Image 1 (cartoon, rainbow, N blue to C red):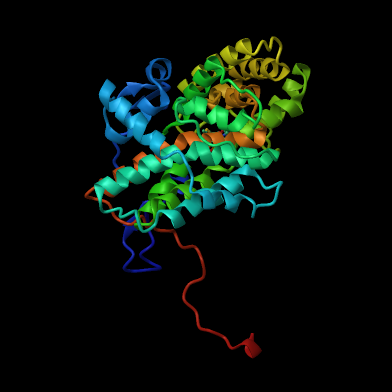
Image 2 (spheres, rainbow, N blue to C red; image 1 turned 45 degrees about the vertical axis):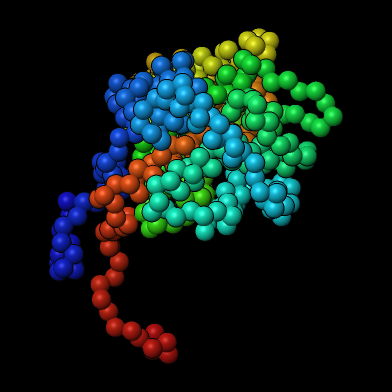
Length: 402
Ligand code: ACO
């Protein structure tokens, strides 16, 4: 606690906490993390059980409503999401304004921001019904936007949603089907995609979620707030880490070069970090990383990929790091991003799409947290203070006298 009263007599006391390492910005009932023990619960349910036994839309319902749905509630929810999967046809023309080689996250950010232009007048955030409609719209349209982003990226025609398919299968269909060719979604891969979505659904007050809450605290349009979350997620220290982790594995190339990279990660004069390692909250194995590793093996087995060189490097890197004093002392374990890149690449996505998939899945967490914030009677506009270290008050000097 710092008293800067000597500089500003009426500023009073506040905490100075760079990176908010020990400041709670809100109360929340959605997600609980015990970083020391490696526990992640959504509304009290362990992530392992949700990922093994639930499906993504069930988890969406849980995050939004606080309880698991009954069968009838689930059917109704699935149907409501399905009704909103289409984009306004005008939205598809926005894509052509982007450079062909634009990063998909840049396109995604712009497209989701553009949704606010379509649903601004119909989104009265003081109305609970309209808040829920906006939430469902967001969850329903993200796979369509993400798939169109992919198609634009690879230069193929857009594929419209097929609403008789499951959420994950529909997404794979929109990404990988091409006109005039038969495409059947592999159910094992659709299940893996669905599980990847579950693993990314929410993670309490991480940087992008805090961004969405902060943007939303001013009463801004929720679609614009999600676009802000996407911008924040893009960074390599956050959602961009799976892309960075896979690039790192490719750069390492062969297992014999691992010690060189471990040494670089430990060298304080080298900015290099092991991507996919370490976490602000988990000081133990990220529980999502374990499920992701299992999913990775399942996907590779289904596709008949026996020896994936990058998986081999990843497993060896993990083995060496987990027995290295530096990583033990700093409690650095693989996070979800360590194995997700290999899995997503095996599913057929280029690395540039990885963070887009993360954004797709995290949308439900962002929107659930946004809704919780709006519905909180204590809610105020977010307005952090600062510790001013600049010049004291001084007098203006005319330019010819400086
Ligand atoms: N490789 C090598 N050293 C590391 C790593 C790493 N991946 N991560 C942290 N450290 C070291 C730091 O150098 C620091 O050492 P010091 O105490 O000697 O200065 C110490 O561990 C603590 O690191 P901080 O950066 O202070 O920890 P913070 O909580 O701020 O950072 C973060 C967490 C950003 C995730 C960090 O571990 C990192 O950069 N990891 C690599 C990127 C990554 O995988 N991001 C994905 C996060 S998960 C997600 O967004 C879904």
